[in-house]
Image 1 (cartoon, rainbow, N blue to C red):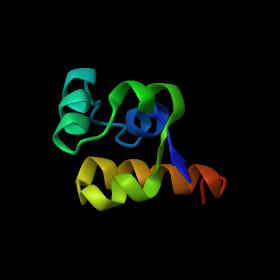
Image 2 (image 1 turned 135 degrees about the vertical axis):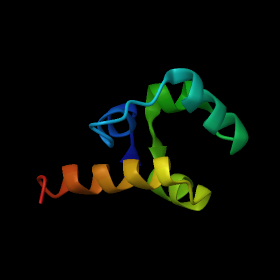
Image 3 (image 1 turned 90 degrees about the horizontal axis):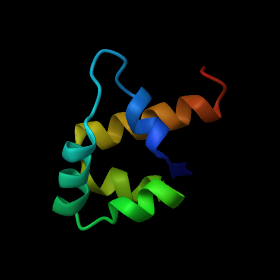
Image 4 (image 1 turned 180 degrees about the vertical axis):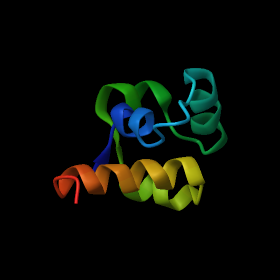
Length: 69
């Protein structure tokens, strides 16, 4: 399963993530922000970070795949 920018953006309806903070997160974890914006990233890479923002994005993507269930 791939995680895309929309999963980050919509994973927290009450809190929006800024691009600057996301870029910092990607740099901290050795991930390529530009490639992510173009192609997404495998969910496993996000899960490996054990970061709450990343884990919420994975959860959101899973819900999207299951039709919101």
